[in-house]
Amino acid sequence: MKFDWKGIGQTVASAAPIIGGLLGGPAGASVGALVSSVLGCENSPQAVNAAIAKDPQAMAKLRMAEMDHKEDLEKLRLKEIEIYLDDRDSARSRQVELAKAGSADNTQTVLAYGSTIGFFGCIFAMFYIDTAPAMRDVLLVLMGTLSGTVKDLYGYYFGSSKPDNK
Image (cartoon, rainbow, N blue to C red; front, side, top):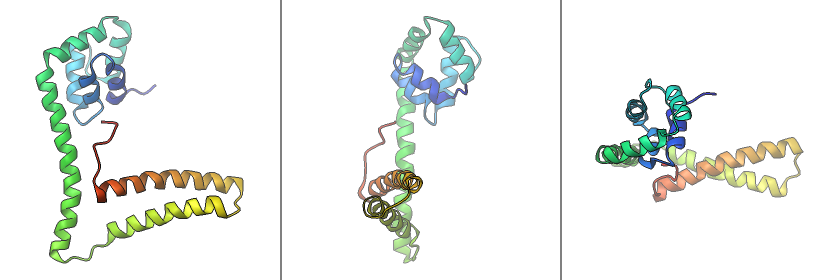
């Protein structure tokens, strides 16, 4: 079984939610170093997983570490939020700068319309076109993918909240 910091974060989140959340994000390796030092093991997801499995007090130790380092962990969490917001802002700023410069880069518009038309085309095909069962499965997969894309497009163009998985 392959272990990564995100998986360890999910395990740890029940006892130490801040640490668990940070392990799954950009600061995962840094927070992993804290976790491994608290558990007295090598700084790797595999070693941390093994330490958690063999030490019944591991979760309590991590909870104590979270309380001891709460201020630093909160700063890391805020930094992750800043990174997310900066990334989102840079995409929108790019669009604004292109408009100010009078550039005719229609890539985003073409992709947005294409994805939306494709999504509704899949819905149309599902209900009004007689397709083979294998083709219907392909349409369902395509519709699921396009559904996520259209959701992201609405988030980009109309604004959205931070994703639920963060």
